[in-house]
Image (cartoon, rainbow, N blue to C red; front, side, top):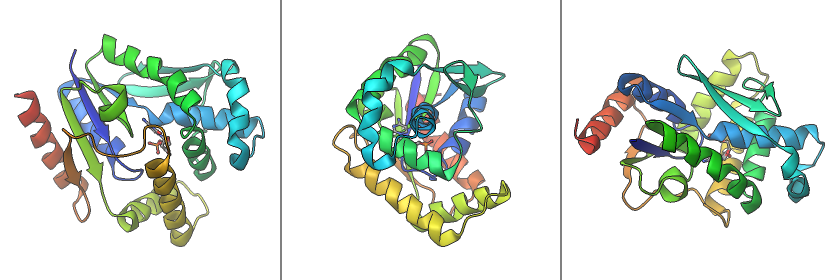
Length: 222
Ligand code: DC
């Protein structure tokens, strides 16, 4: 099986890029952030405050997360319920970032991710795919963009969905998540040594996709 690991901060355009490449290559697109979001949703629904997020640890056995693929579209199930839309709110983004700093959560979710890569050709998007989850991936990409550009994209996306947010608040949340993701003790966000770094600041989706696809082709030798 072939594996492409794509890591990088939130809002760098990973999911759009990765979906495009998965489609071109016929690989399964695995959005690993969704499983952290599902655990974050569990914590939020259990009324565990983010600043005492450790309280979710004794309850991890109550959490069952599953990913399914229907016509190439990933769905996330939390204890049998499709939560694919519910996990996409600013509140759950912050919860996902909080739970993802807990080593107990990361190790619980590791097997699920590796199992999918064992059975399928995958392009997997996350934060530690090239460094921890699939250290032997055939291609490793670190996709990034400036915090301001990522906040602008995220803001437009949320406004498009009818959410009531401001650009300043969105930028603050982007920076808060970056700080959490880069500074946590376990699997912090950083490029693998053998990753190609692709910066999408100032590039259109089409330009970024072309750049990324060229790297993937080169590395896979296709
Ligand atoms: O990619 P995303 O924004 O949906 O991810 C949500 C959170 O989960 C993000 O704050 C970082 C965390 N995450 C992680 O720690 N490791 C991954 N492989 C994927 C996501």
